[in-house]
Every structure is written in structure tokens, then in C-alpha cells.
Length: 201
Image (cartoon, rainbow, N blue to C red; front, top):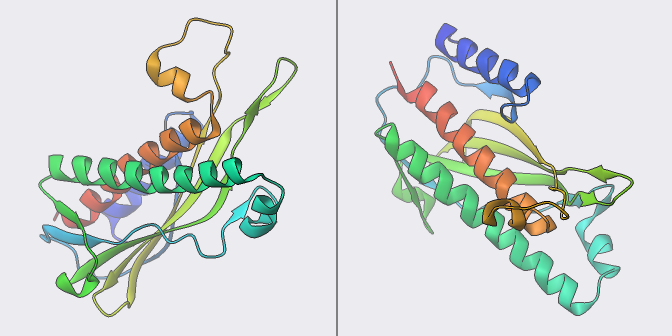
């Protein structure tokens, strides 16, 4: 691993322990770094194949929900994808990197392929509560799908106390979808940071 990348991973790990950011773990990393000086990446939608909600497969989780709840869950998944992409794109742009959502990954030499394997909606009750969680694997591949980098991110968002005065942003976190959207934004920002660390010489 490059010294620069090792330092970036270490700093994010420290921030996570301090409650300041998502956990970040490098699974594999191309060496030498093929992304130095690269300023354009394609982005595919989040892949949810094999998704587990808490401790059960998505289809079993949805089987226990009524039609409205199922529809709401599918909308939440879409909003997670939208918030992740929007945040990644905007924060990468601040670093001088163009990330574009594409339907044809072959349009770029490098493709960012996010995959979500686990989601937890979390909950709030007077006696107890649990944060939401999203675990996202980010793979950066060649146009033909060869994996060069693979990094895992995780974010948790607690529900605010509904009996207190809340901002509009905090009010959104009262719902599982709102908490997941916050997780998606946090991971998107961290993913942009990781990308910048690989692009910089």
C-alpha cells in the first residue's frame, strides 16, 4: 500500500473511533496506483443484489411488510442511491475530479461500482434505541470490470429524540429512510475523500 494511502486510511479509522466518520477498510488496492492524475470516473448505480436487512434476506424482510411499506422501502433504496451519488459527485468535484453517473460503464477507463450488502433501519423508543446502518463496498474497476481497488465503508445514524425541538434535517432522521439517507451522504463524502487520496500524486 502506498504510504499516502495508508495515512489516509489510518486517519479515517481514527475519526471513526472518535465518532466523526464512517469506518473505512481497504480490502485490495492496485499497486502501483493507476489513478494518479486521473480526473474522470464513471459511476454505476448501487448494486443491491444479495442485500440483507438486519439478519434476513431482503425478500424475507419484505414478505412481512404490507404493500405500502414495501413501496416505501423501495423508495428508500432509491433515495440512498441518489444521496450517495449526489454527495460523492459534489465532494469529488471540490477535489477537481469529475464523477458522472453513466448507463454505459465502457465510456470511462475507470468505473466506480458501489455495492450495498447490509442495511439496518434502526429504531427509537423511549426505553431503548438503535442506530441505522449501511455497509457499502466501493469497487473501482477497469471498463471491462477488472477490480483494481475495493474499499468497505460503514455508517450509523441515530434517531433523534422526537420529543425535542428538531431541525428539518434532524426531523428526517426520525424515519428509517431519513437515517439511511444520512448514512448515504456520510459514506458518499468519505468515498470522495478516498478517491482524492488515490488521484493525488
